[in-house]
Length: 117
Image (cartoon, rainbow, N blue to C red; front, side, top):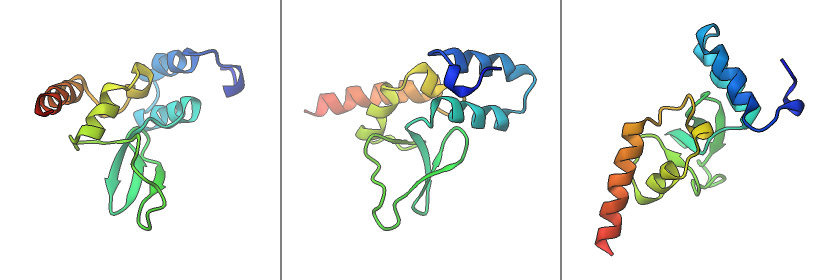
């Protein structure tokens, strides 16, 4: 397997996807985040932001050090979170809890928000 500096766009995802049948899922999630970066989808608990894919701590807002701008919190359907979910690429959604149903809820919420204006 080539090192991360020789990956062509999309190649890291293809290699990891082929390994889905043999490698443990937590390992694949960590590898994907290492290869392509953490997605802008987080889980939030007591001020700590964790990657929704690999569960690594990616931020902390206890003292206001990390704002949630540009990030979506799993299960939080505010206008900002829905906008982020709708803008996710397939690569960013891979191995995250953002399902088609979650994206559809975001689309329906977006229609509701637009109807209010």
